[in-house]
Every structure is written in C-alpha cells, then in structure tokens.
Length: 210
Image (cartoon, rainbow, N blue to C red; front, top):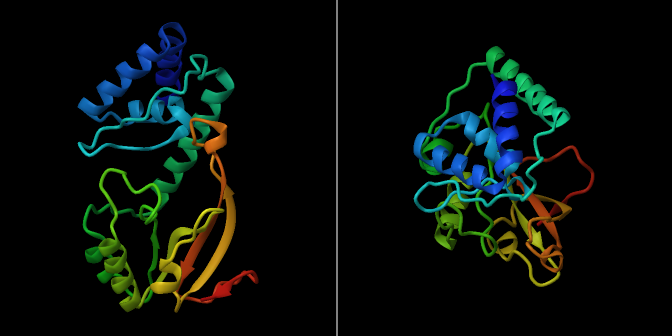
C-alpha cells in the first residue's frame, strides 16, 4: 500500500510540483490520512514536523518535485516495514494527556523521555512553552520514582540555557554539539550544544554534574 501510494503521488508531484504538495497538505488537514502525512513528511522543507495553533500541518514544500525516485520509495517502504514489525510484537498504548498526569502515573520500573519545546528558543509550536510549564515539568520529574531523560539545550555562541543552573542543577547533564540545517539562509544555520538531563547515572564517561 505504501509503495503504490508514494509511486502515484510522487509521479503527480513531479508533474505538478508544489501545487500537488499543497493539495495533499490541505487534504491531510481535513481528513488526517496517515499516508498523506507520510508523503508530506518526506516532501516538506527539511523534513520538519510542525503544526499551527489550529492543529494543522503547515510546513512548506521543499521545492524538489523529483523527490520520490524509486530508491527513495524503497527506503521508505523498508522503514515502514521495520516499524510495523515492532508494533506487531509489542503492546502499545497511546494516551493524549497533560504531562503531569502521565508522569505522575509512572512507576520505578518505567523510563520517561521528555522532549518539550526548548524554553527561550523555538517555542512557538502547536502551543507555547513558558517558564511556568518548565517549572511544572521540573516539579513533577523531581518527584517521580521512574528514571527520566529530558531533552533540552545547553548553549550556543550567543547565550546559554539558564534553567540548567536554576532548575536542573541537581541532575546529570550530558552535552553534545548539534548543527541545525533548518534555517532558510545558510547564515542562520549554526551550531548549538544540546543537553540531556537525567536523574540516574549514565554509563557514558562524558558527563557533568551540575
């Protein structure tokens, strides 16, 4: 099904270009077809996944009409097959709820991974992320019996994430440099030091205790 869908829509994309992309985006925002979403995620600008405040996918076209060549479709089909196999062998439950509710329900046998919008950076996602939200997350993670991993940012050449010292200083912080490729202009694409905050001792040797 995936192969046939991408071949069909890819051929139409090559013919009509961005007009077809935006037709698919409009259709997805009305109907929510997962195959449309798969197409959009591989044909949009830099593979971004972004929704506006109305819950609509709003990433523009990547301007590559010949995106879905045979080799690329095969790669996507193989990726979908691997994930499908994983879902068939395990029991999954998806819950849409406030993070406090989910984290509070975790036990000592659980591992929590949190990836909120980065406070002080690109926070205008589907909804905003404020200092109060960051404090709420800190408070509930500080009390959990589960192990947790929090993705955030450490610093760039202009400034640093002050919450790593004001809120998360009691936990372990692992850093790794990452280069963002999403800026419209190359001059806007710069390196950033990413951070993982953990409430357990990681096996990696490169860590710093705040």
